[in-house]
Amino acid sequence: MKRSLKERVLRLSLLFAGLVIAHFGVTLFLLTDLGADPFNVFVQGIFRTLSRFLHVLTHGYTHLSICILIMLVLLFVDRSYVKIGTLVCMAFGGPIIDVFTRLLGNVIHPGNPFAMRLLTLAAGCVILAFGMTIVIKSDAGTGPNDLVAIVLSDKLAWPFGRTRIAVDLCFVAAGFLLGGVVGIGTLVSAFLVGPVAGIFLPRSEKIVKFFLKKTCGNK
Image 1 (cartoon, helix red, strand yellow):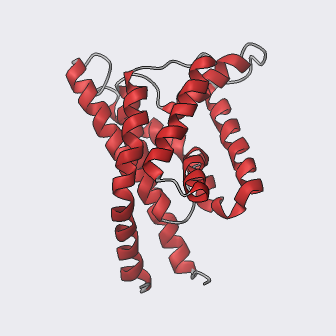
Image 2 (cartoon, helix red, strand yellow; image 1 turned 120 degrees about the horizontal axis):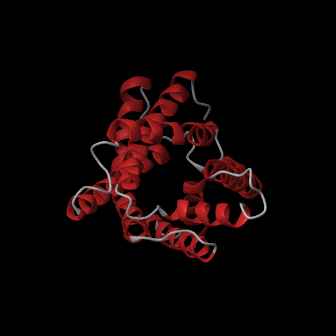
Image 3 (cartoon, helix red, strand yellow; image 1 turned 120 degrees about the vertical axis):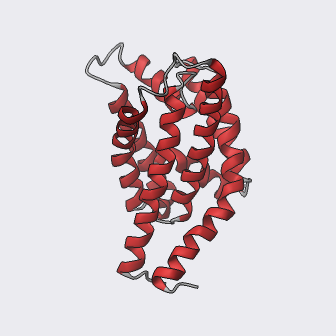
């Protein structure tokens, strides 16, 4: 069934709201400085390997290049997963983190007590998981790195939480072997985000349906 312009705009707005929430969680996670998240360990490993030969590369360009490569593979496997929201996630994820970092950088930092940093890390992972599920259930697209777990979960009929853990561990292992830095934050993220996202998915679906019913009259 073809979606109306109103519904498409609402779904994209919900995606963007979820993106902001998710990257607020990512910012909390990163500011604790207890280890990069699994995907960024992978990006860091690729960046360190390639920078030996290509000195013009940056972490950001490497991140973008890997996301584009994942998108190209997904277009070949099943292009229905790649939507306009995928491009939105790619374009706005970094700037959102930059904004939250400027706002919170003086409050949350490595100088905080370890217990506080650990609690902030756990909170960031939970917030990231919630925002990520809003993005997924908006059905307007999601970030290329998140799509890896979603596609595998759908195609193999595996529970999303376990699939996310498996994908994150693969990112960590590959990144570590290539020179990426692994810390306690990496392990907490790998084992917490997937299962918590699995809990949030049905609840986030209800939230999205509520707004669609209120705004567009969808059943």
